[in-house]
Length: 483
Image (spheres, rainbow, N blue to C red):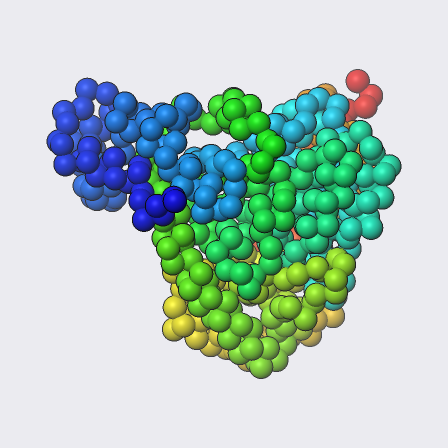
């Protein structure tokens, strides 16, 4: 039996701290003595365990003792065959999945509403995307899940594809029929990779949608720091039976640091233990708080906090009720405008606001009094700031036309052109609102008038824009086809 009460990395660090070992290794702050301001900021105990790899603490690149033990405990807790502790965020886990499955010229089937880390992986390895453009709920302005019929069509039209990539769930809580996608993909000898950046909790609460490992997916990237309670940038990569874990470790080591942070590693270790022992009841409370918030917000008027009523068996196969996603256009306010009001006027920081929605992330650290404060602030905003919604745009992104592979476009000769003059050009860079980090444009995609107008609109509304060489996002880098 696996003893989930253990936390091997934390225990080894605690033992080291009590030994009072004299450090003649890195990091150079030497347990904080060389940087007292850092001690003031983080505390003596924290900097005291900010240490380098050594025999008693194992090595993240080639774990044989305490890190290996922690990974075995993690695999058991998440119903996986193997687990890898990741200190480069879920970005590194997503990229490791794709780089383990695809090489230059290989096809990968995926929805267009993926996080930028997935498309970045295509830039790195040279794989070619085959997009299954998801349905869009035009009322809410969000993309939905991958319909099984469209995945089947993509597989039949691309029988040489190596993998199918699935969001489980999306940022907004939408879940595809991942069990059926796995069955279909495996029948055609394709791997299934799941981005579960927003699905840590699915493994610990049976009343939530099915997790990727339980659905039979081959690999899954888990943002433990989002709903799981670990430190920012700490994540997990899971693999199922039949995946060569030794090869995956080699892929991870291509890009992951050789100086893994023991603060991040120990936070993964402790958080896994917490969820293994108390996750079920913790996430039951999260579900209850989110459902209560939904009910209260929908009674305000003007908002629509959506939930399981969206389920239709196809494009919305299931819904993650811990996600408090709220449509705001009924108030005549873009989601990003409500986001700004909550932060600037009410000292409430939510996860993000897009063109037509906000997302308040509810997890194990929230309290009912915090929910009440959020609901009260939203009611106040409705009363004070509500206006005519005429002319408001909706839509998470515009479905693009892929002309070249992301790698080919990213490394092509490019030129800088004012956004208004780029219609008909091929993008050589990313354009995205962050969060959620879903590209409006990715390298290799055709720039249309609709996309230009959408970028200008979200800029005007105050979305945080990323991806372009031009920090002001007045110009875009496009392929120089004349050279």
